[in-house]
Image 1: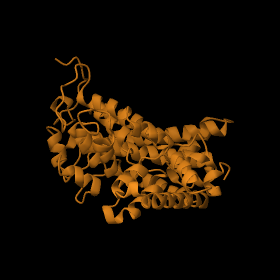
Image 2: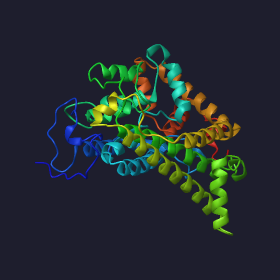
Image 3: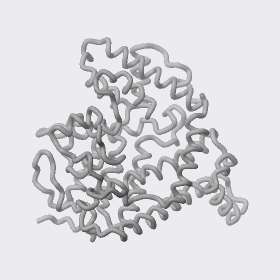
Image 4: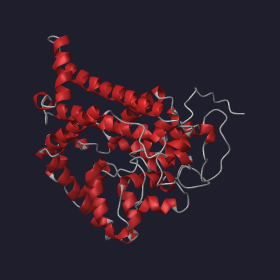
Length: 379
């Protein structure tokens, strides 16, 4: 008998005792639910630890206080758990999805992904979401009986469909789907939808924070966005003569809270309108039940547009990104010429698993001095 005592969750949540199981049968744990075991397995992987040195927006040489893939994933997890608990969903499944969602990211973030996708064009391409599945089902070697972590069906399904149903799966996901059907064309669970929207909340707010910290965007620029100026005015009117750094952090915190409250209100209303009997009804529906109100969607869109124009396309970020892409491409090409890396898929797996700093170290050892933009922390 399991000693695990779970809180009451909604009938349309993903119930761990009804899990579809694992690809390889294992005995149940006496003290952890299947989704708790999945969370623990994810957190003990090499891939999870490596996210500490993988780019979110700013490359690691830029400073110690900017978000990395690891700190981003932890922030997503915190927001996702709050949403999941408030909506009476399975918090452990939600947390597993939030912690694992970026494990397939290569070094230098999306810039590295573009390089790998181009270099792998004749070998099925490269997609970081699909690579997450590959990491968790093939590349982690922690158990003597199987490759990967042998996670539950619900975790793998949620990671595969974190952006919605998949009709044309990338190579790595297609490869896994042939042996383990994740029902890619149906909607995902509510826990998956929560993890996805928590990702949106986390990266949009903390990219603002990191942009302000870097000095590449200013408070004055941010206040051109209505929702940001509204919160800023409320804070400055309430807190007189307060340290600007404290105000800035309160600004971001209030914005996160605003997104969370709106998501909970809107999602709860949608869930109450539908007669959902179980998670099967969720997957069969045409609706996304976790989301923002139309007004909040507009605010989010304005922030995303601002970040794209003022931060992601800032010449300093672009120059560092382009230099990182050049370094990664040259390293890939150098290794591709070595006989031991004739298998391009293994080479892509190897490079995708690298941290930013390991790429830079390998480049210096194998090719030569790094470009100034990646070797000078004051750039």
